[in-house]
Structures are given as structure tokens and as C-alpha cells.
Length: 133
Image (cartoon, rainbow, N blue to C red; front, side, top):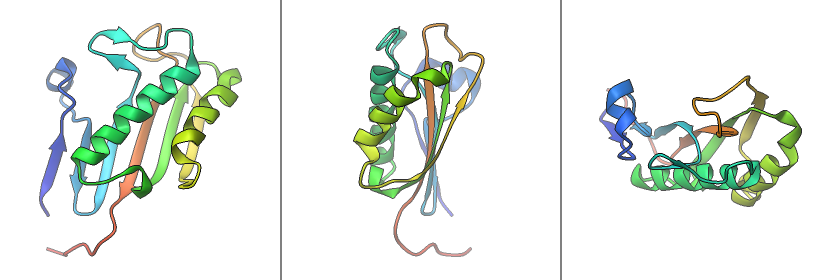
């Protein structure tokens, strides 16, 4: 099967050796995504805004991969303060209310930057038949 790597243009993708998303066949995996634009954190001290921004970045990566939010079957949310679950959940619900993928939200001790509160991964399955090789 053909592999399609999707880049966000972030400089650390080449340094670390990863892609924003990877599509193989009808599966799209989106890497952990945080609320950063360039080197600027969007929504400092605001878990709701950080979640919305990360999910918008995920949506853009899915579109580049020929998918959409409607194809998402799972999200994983890593949060630094689980007491903010309602804010994070509200933002997630705004993107996925009618889609309702399987999801996980877990608290972690920290993310890669001190101002980051949320990191989100997604898995999408694009409708269609996968050809076996």
C-alpha cells in the first residue's frame, strides 16, 4: 500500500523524525497535537482554547490526508490537569458531537512545553475498500 506522510511544516518534525499524520490505505493516524502556532502557545492557561486549537490542527491534517473529522474513530487526550476535564470535554464535544469517536482522557505529569495543557492524537478510517497487496 502507498504511504502518505502529512507534514505541518513544524521544524521539529525533521529533527524528531515524525509526521503530523500518516495515511496507509484507508487508515490515518494523527500524531499527538498541541496548541502551538510556530513557537507560540495558543490559549495559555486555557484548556478549552488549547483543545479547540489542537483539534482544528488535527482536522486540517485529516483534510490533507483525504479524510475528515467524520472518519475519526478514536481520540486520545493527554492532559496535565484532569480537573479541567469539563472544559476539554466541551471543546472535544463541539468538534465530535454527532460523530462520537471512542476516546480516552488521561492525566500526565507534563507535556513537552510548560504552558501546554492538552495533547491529542486521532485515528481515522476512511470509507472504502482496502486493496490487499
